[in-house]
Image (cartoon, rainbow, N blue to C red):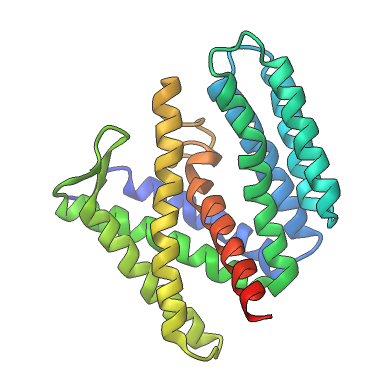
Length: 259
């Protein structure tokens, strides 16, 4: 049986999806503003989950580091900002229970959102849209198959609701969507994109599990309740930003080997 909040999730997705897709297709400055807004909300949610105090201070540091990563095209400038931000967070977080998690927020948010920006700069909107639809396919396939078939748990101590059947459904649907979009875009060797999509689907689930582990560690169910049926922004994009980092890393490694 599909869970009762499926329709709430669906309606919310139908409202937000056109806005996100529109910003991607229109590219700049709409895409930049979208990433900046997402990054700022991720920064606030991370601070709210992990910090016991000074939430606004931590959120501001995360947002500044993320914005620098998004807007600068200087690798040295980005690295300097990340190092400086991490030092400030580490000093400010003295006495915080989850000091290391607070520190993790700087590279996790800034590099995750920054990867989405770099992918746009490198390949334009079709690549970003392809990645987005693949990630959505993982969530939809995992949700429908996992709720219908159930079976053995994937990681019961981290996320009790995730199952191996859900992972299989998400990977399969992601591969189909990856292939289908590559075919529609008239790209060569569409099966390669299906394989890439399947691999990214696994990393998307890893990103999801990482956030689940963090939430379990700090004792919260959702990163926030800003998105009806989905929880917070982090609950919605945790797998996306992790998959984006892996995707970008794969492109860089591949380009280095080939050229």
